[in-house]
Length: 195
Image 1 (spheres, one colour):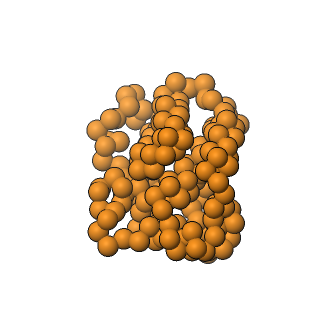
Image 2 (cartoon, one colour):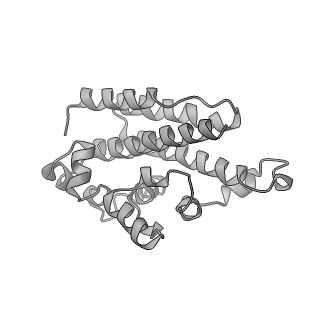
């Protein structure tokens, strides 16, 4: 893998490319992105994974609400958001303009192209978030299962086969945060373009 300083620099450059949005509720993700990046810099990988994943969940929940008919959007339904799973949100937006593909690895993007559907139980972004959020990471789980085994992804993420096979928490956090920032950049660009 590239050095830690290079990883931090790559993360910072990408974070700085995320454009601010004018709508206040849509900016709820900003403190989470800042916190996730700070956690990565301070070498707190579990916090980085959870907080970056939360920022995605917030944006998808907000988009879920925003796309409802206007008469259903009088108030923000906090209770409804608590009951919407990340898997359900991925399914809902997999064939929309929401850039779910930025959260997917090579094989997952290929599956979506071929079938038009996602097997949300096997998506690594969701699996990674769930493993850490539910505290079941250390029950017979190799960290390598949380990172794509495809060479194309290794090149993209800056890791090699040995680092994949002997994955560390820092590597998993880097990949999760990288996917999150790419998603945020694409989503905010899209929302700004739509006006």
